[in-house]
Image (cartoon, rainbow, N blue to C red):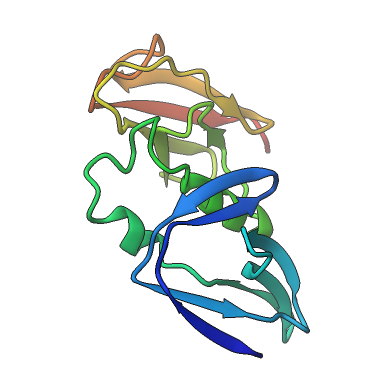
Length: 169
């Protein structure tokens, strides 16, 4: 690949039609002759590529999202850079299937399986404001009950814990 380095400046990256502004200490550009370009910067340089490697795929992001977010206490607020879109893209490409998806990018969920039919989901509100919670469940899964909190929403800077059950055999 061809590499080019430039001093950092705010960089507008377009991923699936959404513009995301990143600022970094080093700016790297590359060509992607053997990979699909999935996101570019404002100059058309590839920022996110996807190629085949062995029996799988290899995604490359020419940006340090964590370096961008870590020093910013406001990184997970609604008005912040929507970096979550990169994580959602990686999950989609990897074929990750969740049993519960949050309808809100600022409510993050983790799944904890007890066995093949039982799971707990912890839904964390990463903002200082209460947020409504209307999750989407995978086919065959139901919410048995909230163990902590309620289904009315997730309080500010807090979480709810849900018990889920699979109806599949």
